[in-house]
Image: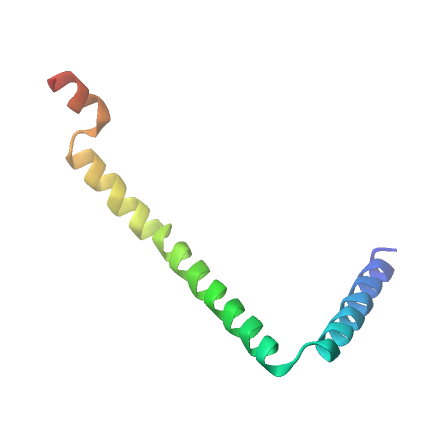
Length: 75
């Protein structure tokens, strides 16, 4: 049953893509492709910002500064 659902999903997705690609002109297609590539680039930038190395670096820096509670106690 799941296999049938997967086939139906793929077939309907292909059919919708075929219909929309016939109605889009070339500048619109290029703009959509460029926007999608920009989105992928932004996603990879965000993914790099939240990598294990960056999080570990931020945590070490936080511990070196003494944490948030030590700054409140000093005032």
